[in-house]
Amino acid sequence: MSCSAAATGVFETGNYTTVLQKVESVTCSTKSSVVVPPPKPLLIATPCEAGEFPLLIFLHGYLLYNSFYSLLIQHVASHGFIVIAPQLYTVAGADSSDEIKSTATITDWLPKGLQQVLPLHVQPKLSKIGLAGHSRGGKTAFALALQKAATTLRFSAVIGVDPVDGMDKGKQTPPPVLTYVPHSFDLDMAAMVIGSGLGEIRRNPLFPPCAPKGVNHEDFFRECQKPACYFVVKDFGHLDMLDDETRGIRGKATYCLCMNGKSREPMRRFVGGIMVAFMKAYLGSDNSDLMAIRDGQTGPVELQTSEFWI
Image 1 (cartoon, rainbow, N blue to C red):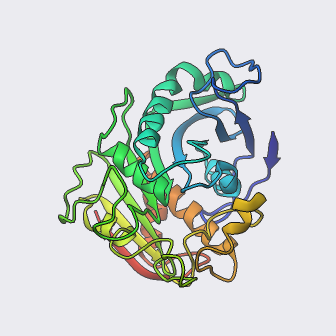
Image 2 (tube, rainbow, N blue to C red):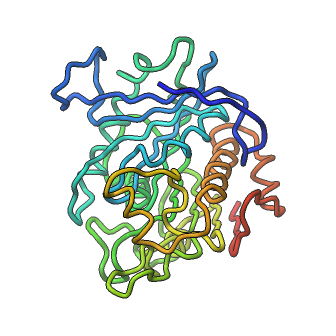
Image 3 (cartoon, rainbow, N blue to C red):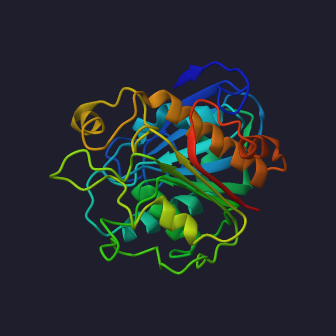
């Protein structure tokens, strides 16, 4: 476990000290002291202080590790949320059906197993759960919110962080989420979509852009219904919300495959802050930070798009 300190404002570290811990899954060969292990390995960021906190399940992008989002999920946790980031797979093909089912299974595990892995005096508020994902994880989050797999717990909000539904329009990966019918997402919850301004630009002529036009954030938001929010961050790329240091071959590749901004830190702080503001509004009852962002207080970045359907 590692702890980090605190400050104020949604784009800054929050007032809670955070602890970051790994929880091994039931499929691991190593013995676990957890009585009811989770179905997938988890990275959990949580406040250290006593209290009852809403939850956020955060799903990683295609072929990425949950550890690449350590700073982002600690930022969210420092504002009074428990963030659960599963490692859904290490190798995967085009079909994301297993990820959708695995996320549903993890959600169903929460009442049985989450409390035993949290710090003493930290209580999960299981009636208030947000669901978020980056890239292919954003597609998975929307798929589960659209009930492509059943869960015993209900979600209060869904967030797509530069979500991607395939290679191009007409080349969606199964199961397709986008219908190309405006406002067709029948979601019984609030939705937010965050896009990257550089995500649909090719970095290398041999590879497609990381968030291709026709299957990206623009299309996801177009199919949302009220209440929904949409932000596109200018001059930042598809992977700029990851940690600065992402190790290994996959970690190094995150700096090579997509168009990137000058630094990851501003995009990461914006994504963390806007998720906090959105969840405070829709998992709690405080929309002051979200309304301040609507009025132009965007912290460390400049937006090229900002829309509110409330």
